[in-house]
Amino acid sequence: LVGLSDTALTGYFLEERHLAAINLMAYLLWLFYAIFSVVATGAAALVARYVGARKPAVAQRAIQQSFLIGMLLAVAGAAFGLVFAEPLVGILQLKGPSADSSVRYLYYIMPVMPMVMINAVGISCLRGAGAMVQGLVVMLLVNLVNISVSWAFCLGLGPLPRWGWDGIAFGTACGYTVGGLAVGWMLWRGVHGLRLNVHGFRPNLRLMRRILRIGIPGGLDTMSVVGSQLWFLSVINMLGDRAAAAHGIAIRVESLAFIPAAAFQVAAATMAGQYLGAGLKTKAERSVWAACLIGGVFMSLAGLLFYFRPVALASLLLGPHQKEIAFAAAPLLRTIALAMPPLTLVIVLSGALRGAGDTRWPLAFSLIGLLGIRVPAAHWLALEALHVPLLGARITGLGLGVVGAWYAMVTDLYVRAVLMVWRVRHGGWKDVRV
Image (cartoon, rainbow, N blue to C red; front, side, top):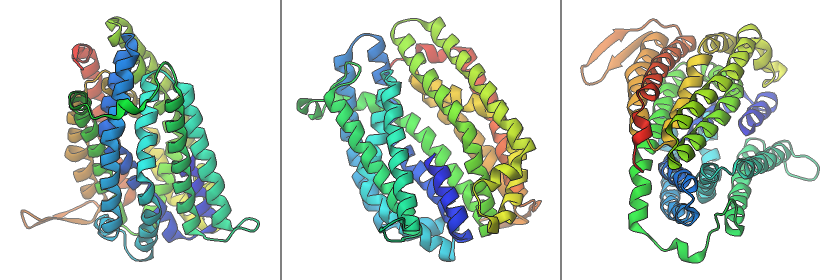
């Protein structure tokens, strides 16, 4: 909801350069979450197993050790982001005023990286324990604060100053701060038999190694996805602000379909981990396929809307002065509409495998699909010419523009869906030791 709200706010009241910048910021925030997923994936898998095995004390220690590791990553990431904000944006091929807006946004977000970490790791652990309602409450609070503050300070409602673009960034920082405090408060008071205490924050190297043994492949999987997406985005940014803005709008509309898929991904991960912890392998697999089936129905319905009403959906996020972007986004939505079933399988099955602690195979599949198919195909399909630095060669591309990049994305999704289905049917994930 935050992403949709920020995009709508930008589309109605700010300029095209801000639309390109808000799209890039969405990817970079995803990157920060991916970094923390190194910890969150391992911690959630252990928490789910130990809760399923009726060992809440060990699950509680796993949460606290995950926060220690996460805080180190958060402080290091914040320092890096503050120092290298401009080069980071430049690498992603965004230039001029759009790049300047992106850098300003980062300067608001970097200081609250510890709170972003507590959100990412804490909510993953709550879900691993089966505390879905508490995680939902926190995310609703984050959304409420973010949306309220962003709109108030962007537009200067009442006596508040009109900060424009800076108001959106400030609202995002406030949302993460409140969310981090809420997660910490919940875990300190106790939830689902898990309660933090001062003594649990003493470093336990053995438990940290277990968290990282599972989390590093899972985190690398998520980071490879985000890194490849950023590379993919850099191809689109080469096509100009109009293409970048259309891509960003289409992604935001598509994210509506992610809501049910993400919900069933969490359900599949939690049930797979807890059933395996209880020794119920058959129920673990059945729960995974049930999540795919139900999630696929919702995703397919969303796909029908994307295919038949793309301009209307894109226009919901844009002011009347941005109609050209809505028409540019329409073919992108029609393209992704054809990939809703494989997208469901990729989202839900990857979550189930990570929830079971089987993090190496999703990493391999991501590398094959993203680096082996999506990124090179996007260069060839979208650009009129591409240079191969190591070979010094120049290859003629098809020059299809941003829609060509989306053709590459759909091809990648179908390949990864087949690989994910193979791994789940193989059954080796049910015997992974955590």
